[in-house]
Image 1 (cartoon, rainbow, N blue to C red):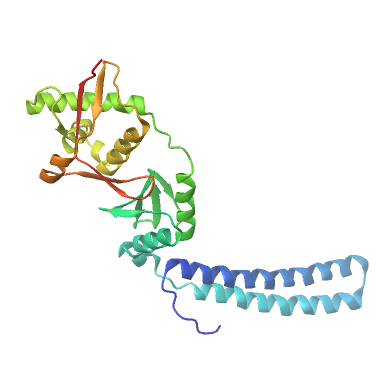
Image 2: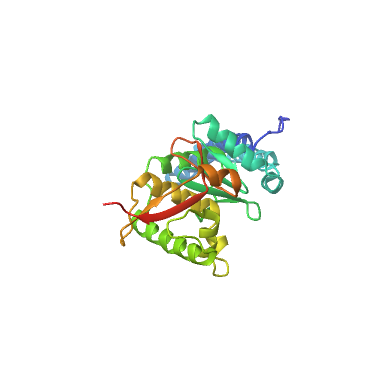
Length: 264
């Protein structure tokens, strides 16, 4: 086994293992081929060919065993440290940028329209839209995110706008606001996630992503005849905001919403 430069990233480490494993596969294939020749010679009684084939199989098997050990010894990458330190998330963002897939980090998550990605250091996995995935090679994850961008999002705008209206009404009542006045989105999210664990299961990044999807859908009217608006300017400057990523990869900020009677 020759000395190799220590890989700087998980992608590089996996590329090296893939290359070394390919060499091992070829070596094992050659040993297997020789063993098959020995079997064929034995089945026909070709004793001179049998001895030659067996000698070749033994030699090739020894070589193959060495290449397999090299593959195992070459894998020295500290995956746990890479994930725990935050380096994996940085590598994933760099891989996305290199592939032209726009993404950015928000708190402990990576936003990449329409997906929300969370790195799970405990078991070295990624969670994409609440689905755990053990395939963590950065180029593979980025390819999956790019594919998700090409699909229409599975989002029911009609149902979501009714949920928004219900949350808005609760905030208006609890804050003693006038009907139709803007309410802070963080307050609406709070009333929509009152049950224990609900805020964890439906976090602010997901809420902001869904706001963007309903914003883009053009669905602004509720069943009771009110119309959704998402005022931002003044509320953005004076309080907490929600951030998501647009279809084109730009940061999108939301601060408040209101439901007003639709003008006929």
